[in-house]
Image 1 (cartoon, each protein chain N blue to C red):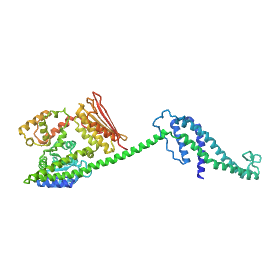
Image 2 (image 1 turned 90 degrees about the vertical axis):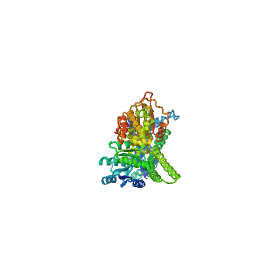
Image 3 (image 1 turned 60 degrees about the horizontal axis):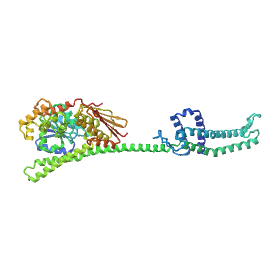
Image 4 (image 1 turned 90 degrees about the horizontal axis):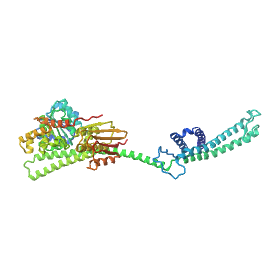
Length: 222
Length: 393
């Protein structure tokens, strides 16, 4: 599996290269900034890309923009965005084209090697890998909304689902049967008023869309 | 020599302004006009005497309560001074004019007496006709010399006396001088506060950037290596595996803590997107539908951005938790050097600042920046939180 990385920090870029090589990924290129990343993507046509949010020259959100631009240029290009902190806003922007193949993880998660590479493969396959912190931010809400009607177990299932795990993985993590997971998901969707849906990233979409819709009027900047 | 010319010019000027004072008396009764006219004289007098005359403050901070002085400053400056000015400048100016005029007459008589018709010769003071060289060369130079001496020695003290009189009568009151010192102090403090704010802003950004590129990046690199080590420990003694596992989890906790610290110091989204972008993210995340309007902000110091961001965060969280509102509004705009933030909702009202510590913390942070925070929340609603913070200049 060919990977293109956009990461300006030499230490982390080196670490990623080592780790991915040891896990059977082929690192085709490591770009230090956004334009070089876009060139590398055009040249190597990778199966998946890893992008740091902060890149030169301004070290703001160039990585997010580069990721969105790469996905506009190469439809459906799988992108895993890494950052030292997560913002729901960025998750929303990354997911907004509704295509899947998106990951957004804290850099910390890279050190959980098996989970990280699992997430990377999921993204490469068109699924999603959302950081638990994004999900927990989304799920910490006022008490009187629909999410409050979920049972603790349903909360757990929804969170794992939103992270991008499929039913089998959720069953494995919660140590329950696949059948039980299926029932919980049906119940979550029912309580949130969503039609049941099978696809991994579409389920995250459903969660985000639901939260977005309920907010109603958006923000305006004059 | 120059002093004498200056004194002469001062006296002639004073004569002129004395005449204008008499003619323009009704106009000078207008406070602004009278003030400008008086200040002009203070400056002239100060120049002549070589003393610095700081401008009188425009408005005294307070009307002094029943001062014991028999003559109030308004009466002293408005009535006593014009009378004294006219009363002294008119005679002394006219005396100087007479002096100069008679010196000129004496000099003309001395040199050109013969050109006058015989039945109308020029006259010196004391009605002395100049009709021959004897008188022309004795009495005429004597008169010129005496008057020149009078003007030479008498003019400067006269001018200085008048200048001192003006300064004394037009002097600011102690209250006005105090207010002047205070306003100068306030100006200095405002400037240094703005400087401190700028320095603080640069510092916050630097800390956030340094942590991000330094400590946080290093911790990630260490965690990745520990993670890889942990994976490849199969077969190693169990205590080693436990140690590496503990180390790995310790580093992960340190990273999580550091993230919390950075968020509290300078939220990263502010660094990435600026205040408007960060507020848009907050509004989009709000559990209650929130309308955001951001006016022109220009450059806002980082400390002010941070407080604005935390204030909106806290307000929206409170609305979501307690207000039972169906919609909220966030308005941020800049008026001059003040940033104003308004967060309002259509909820049940009755918000109590004493409950919970969130808003109290925001109030302290706002106060530290010389800002104000006002919460209005009558029972039944609506609730509005208004924060104003100066942005320096």
